[in-house]
Image (cartoon, rainbow, N blue to C red; front, side, top):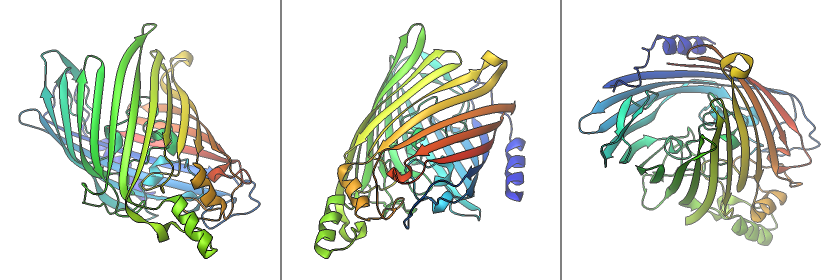
Amino acid sequence: MKALSLLVAATLALAAPARADEPEAFSVHGQTTYIRQLKPSFDSPYAGPHSLSGAREWSYSLTGTLNLGARLPDGTEMYVDGEVVQGVAFSGLQGLAGFPNSELARTSGADATFYLARLFVRHTFALGDETEDVEAAADQLASRYAKHRVVVTAGNVSVLDIFDANAYSHDGRTQFMNWSLATHGAWDYPADSHGYTWGAAAEYFADGWSARAGRFAQPREPNGLRLDPRIFEHYGDAIELARDYSWAAQSGVVRLLAFRNRAVMARYDDALALAATDMAAPNLAAVRTADQVKIGIGVSLEHRFSADLGFFARAMRADGQTETYAYTEIDSSASAGLSMGGARWGRTNDTLGVAVACNALSASHRRFLEDGGETFFLGDGRLSYRPEQIVEAYYSVQLRRGILLAFDYQRIANPGYNSDRGPASFVAVRLHLER
């Protein structure tokens, strides 16, 4: 709790952000998020080495981030973020695909860990005279950009800073917390175990359209912390096309996202074939080879029904032939939800969110687990397969500007894709401060 007190004090001490219509030369922002979760006991007739425990458990995460930004000459901006994390996950972060706290991906145990989260430059090439104002935020100087422009970002980033920027379900610090709702669950996007990577992306904006493409470094090993610098041999590529639209006097965005990963990975069918000859449980580590490829494609929608009511939906399918490398164990995913402001009940700055998600595995991934195989996240010893189904609801109260207190409930049926176990429930309280 001493660490939490220090992070809260540091966040509140930061200078207030500049006005949106005043281009900034320099910015300082920060955030602190503390999440405490309880999992009551649930029905668990058996468990394996990588199962979610059926016993009652507590979990927590604590993250703090300092964001620095500076405007350089000729349309270039530079950003540096330092981060501190600590936390304890349910069951050693095993036994689920849709984990109930996206912040736990960054933590490494009960001792505080400090690291560089971001270090990147962003350059904007103006292609027209018409402009638009962009408000100040973390890693975003208050700026005036040409509406028709090209933006190049390079350095140490989160891929989710650039791609799949859903307005209603993107940030576990202020919105939905489940991993399946932070982005496409089936997108095995490149990142180290803290959620960051090195790479570059280019974006094009014009007349309600935007397109972006990027290449990023993969970890040296599945879900590892060290990144592989051989970005022309092992990498994660992403490409996205987005279209803004207006319907019934309200706005929305449709996005199409595709990815292609190349790394030293194992194929489930290879592990199954080797196990058949050895008469043993399939083992991914025994069949990892260079230059394996994983691909996937997904579509997403966000639509604003009114000033304080928004809807989102996502669906993605990956090929499901190779092991999970950097995110979580989902081969096809679908999710949808609503986000409602509190003006209807006299709480303008409060937010109520409700969402559902469904995660599924490919046939070969399923057979691997049914035969007793173990992955980084899953391994009940056997499997009675059904898709993992998630419901999440949260209510966020604005105590004062920059201070949010949220209450969250999640129910996960078929945890780890196993209908023999669960369902499991999770109750959470979240305190978030930002300046």
